[in-house]
Length: 302
View 1: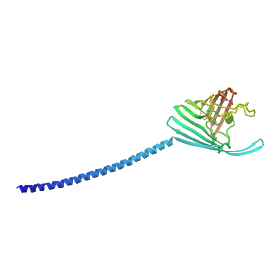
View 2: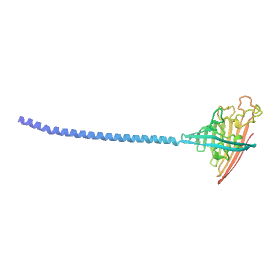
View 3: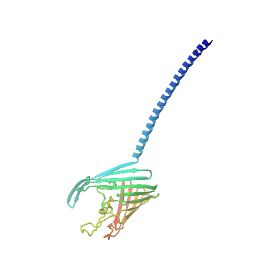
C-alpha cells in the first residue's frame, strides 16, 4: 500500500508541472504581445507629436511673416532742358526707397522708410543715405492713434505720399520742395483722430527748422526753409514746432485740407536770436471725377 501511494503521488505531479509550463509560456507570449503593442503606440505617439511640433513651428513662422510688410520704389530721371539758352541734359537715378513694417499686434506697429539718393553716398558725391520714417504707431481706439519717432510732416499734397505717381512731371513741384520742403520729416510725436463724418485732424510736436542768419552771408538766400530741415540728426531743440492739420474726405473724390505750423524761433539758439517766430499757412483741394483729377495748393510763410 505504501509503495502504491508513492507511485500515484509522482504520477499526479507530472500533469500539473506540464500545465504550469504551458500557462507560463502563454503568459510570456501575452506579455510580449503587450510590449510590442506598447512599442507601436509609443512610435505612433512620437510620430504624431513630431508632426504637431512641425505644424506649430510652421504656423509660428507663417504668423511672423504675415506680420511683416516690405515694399519700395525707385526713380530714375532724365532731364532735357533749355536753361537760359544753354542745353542741359542729365540722367540720374535719383532715389531708391525701401519700406519695412512689422505688426506687433492689433494695436501696435513699426514703420520705416530707408532711402539712398543719387546712387553713391560719400564725401565727394551728391548722394545721401537717409531714414525718412522710423516710428512706432499705437491705436488708442479704432479712430485715434499716436505716432512717435521720425515722422513725415502732415502738410502739403505729396509730403506724406511722395511716390512718383502722386505728382505730375519728372521732378517734384517747386512749391512743394521750396515752401513746403518735401520730403520733410522730423523727430516728434503726432496724434491723429478720424471722425465718422469724413473729418479728421492731426496734431504734432516736433523739432523746429534751423535756418542760417541771412546777414552772415549777403549772397545767401534769406530764410532758406529747405536748408533749415534738421532731419532729426543732432537736431537743435531749444524751440519746438507745433503743426496742425484738418482734413475732409466726406464726399467721394474730394479732399480738402488746411494746415499750419508755428516755429517759435528759426534760429534754434539758446542765445539772442536773429530770427523772429514764423508761421506756415497752407491748404489744398483735390477733386477726382472719373479719370480727371484737379489739384489746387496754397502755401506761405509769415
